[in-house]
Length: 393
Image 1 (cartoon, one colour):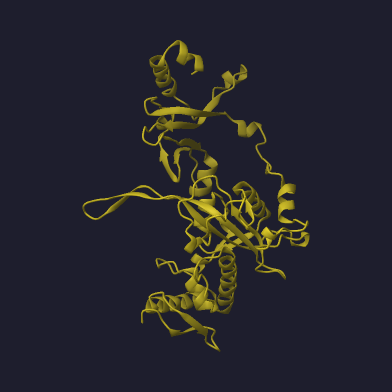
Image 2 (tube, helix red, strand yellow):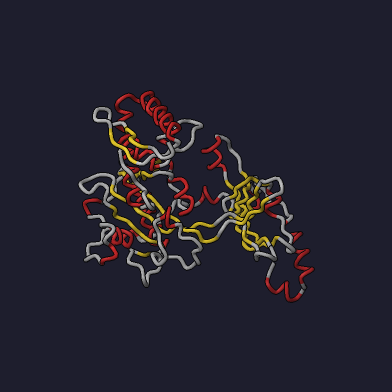
């Protein structure tokens, strides 16, 4: 529908045009060979992005995407295409008619994307990473004199070029941009209307091997233009002013800059080690292949049992008392690396059976202490944690 239609014909005419246009049938089958022989090019609708109107909030954009056979063959072992609705973190299958029908009173088309039929058999669609790798490398391997704001990390040297399979400890801290909106019902139950919005505030990567193992090479504080309602200092270690480049003593940068460095590490094939990485990557909005993620929250967990905190695991296996008054992403990422080393030791000692046996002992101790303690020592022969005093006992 061209812009002039709105001026010449009026909203009612445009509305009827939209209904007739988007109720058309978009075939999924192969086009007629005769049409292609005459020089016609056939296109299929593959993406629609409508604006969902809401007088109270201003509305939001959602996406309808037709996912092809390659994905379903890989994930489900079947050859099929399916339309999906993407609405923030909600993803669900829909009928193709829902993707192609609009009503300008509440669902206004914003973007339509068509794909030329059989393009994948006619064109080479392989693409190279578009970011400037030399620029990312220069950021990772800076050789010029560091400023005082870089004191929390040491950039990589050329000899520490990331290789496939290298270990990188990673942890991220977050701040809150908006509070949760919820309704408390008369029966005592609570319904969430709008979840709280989180934003990444700090991302730390530490070396997982070599003479500088455990030393950070990325320790970025992420500047944000949005208003922070809660710095969550007790859990993030981030304080007011840390994310303001004009007053902060930290290494403040943009999310894009840090994202490109993480993307570079992913493409290099490194393995990220951390505790609860799934949530970190989700908020960062970064997709990492599963075979490049080593998450200690899952390594030290029995099926259908609660997840064990990094703090408890560090106390039990390493004799470390971490996360005292606040969290520190460098400390947490280094601790996750040490726990992974401990896991490998247990596995080498007796395989999966022995690891499971040890985990049952961990859960027994945790429930016995209600997952609380004050200080600990290590047993001189077994290395197991011994508790001299316990909170609440």
